[in-house]
Length: 543
Image (spheres, rainbow, N blue to C red):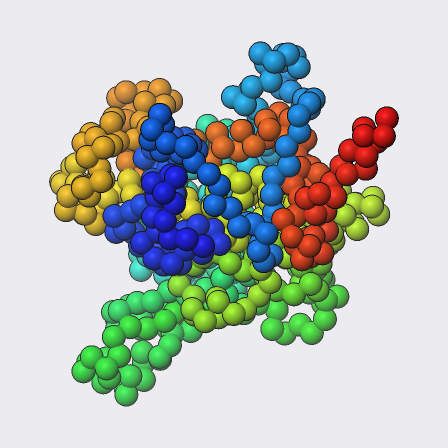
């Protein structure tokens, strides 16, 4: 992919991935990739820049390779489906602002979302903790689910574990409260558990303190790596603390030779790792039995909403996830493909392991269809892994229709939090440390955007309308940036849906996309561009 897009006036600081984000996304970045700029300009980024003095031509290369970028969006020239209640199929009502992107997921209890978007798991990596207020408040205001990732309790020095079970978890409490403070009935706070979280009694702690306000999530894996989660620490005492908490710490900080190397600067950091799950099991049947038992235990505690996150393992593991989650009547299964991002993963592992998202998601649809044809109520799905734009959202929703309800984005909706915090730190130096701002001054490019939050953020006044003028002093600029970016994604999705003549989420179908090359057709089972409706075309010509 190109580093620059002259039409939008964007440029990637580093090498762009399939998502359009730089492979290495920095919290202190001065810009300006498409997502970065969307976080302040919002839906303006849907259109070419410099209107009135330019024309723009497509630089599309979707005929190359197999990826989400090699799928194209179908459009239709007549009809209208799924109009919201009270609207007719008149040309005055069939406009893109009237497209409803509200959706819901769940088995018996439905969880509503204002748009088909959720965050990736934001766990024990320090960047998640530092910018949590922006992420959580932004997600709550937008009305989408946010996921507290694994190990948040275990790495918290202030948490208290008594007889192997958590009794105090201030960082987890902070994260949950931050979201619930602005929760208005749309979205959800989802807390993820891995091996260590399960041992530490995170599920018991949450249900006793928050009841059914929280969705609990079991974790099988993610697209970024095929081992447990990692963080990096630079303090020897903290590394020893994590080792004593029961984590794998590499190199071992309790070994005298390692301590000596650290003292002399030969070792400057330590990697904390989580454990692999299901190591004592050797068959799919054993995994199923153990998994269903764990779900039943969570239900016995009082959990009414349970989800599962799985990674880009092979086809057997994918089938297991869909089948077992369906059998257990789970509320959501997130299928995370390779090609996404991470806060801390072995780099070459992330580059070389796993099933790319478009292939994994294509098989997920195939396997879900098998279960549906047998009369099963298939678990609702979320697709993630290298998705960042509104066209990615539409394509993934269509590829997995009707089973996919949400699109999971990680880095793409963290960028607004970084950017907004940097702006806030400059405009309010007294808050710089508190918001983890990285800039000393606004970049030169900001001259065209303004010098106040009201000027810089296209979504500022929409947020103010929602929370009230007095409450705006408590809203982090990162949350305003997240609202602004989400507004661009939502408006772009509305436009794509209107062009496909689909005015509500349930109407999106696999017939709304087509393959840009024959290899993509073969792998996704989405027909090639000129094959779709070709028979209809000949019927018209021969009539």
